[in-house]
Image 1 (tube, rainbow, N blue to C red):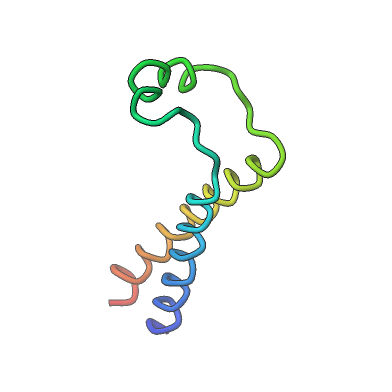
Image 2: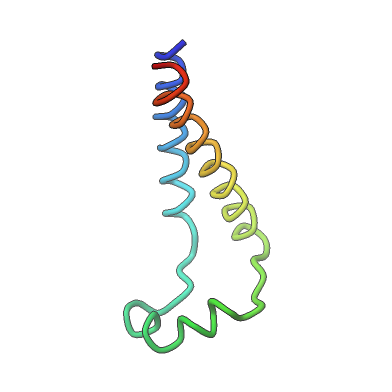
Length: 77
């Protein structure tokens, strides 16, 4: 059981990394993070199309990663 959870954890981590890397950048590097990051953070810009799919996939795989890591570390040990 523990081996199966650990394999799922590694697969989920790889998928999570891919989702994060495929997302488009929201700012123009360091200068955009310093000057214009706040207006994008608090602005009401909604993701559309592939960005929406990547965003939702990132959230789902992040939650799944947390649950699998918790299960692996505390429940199955």
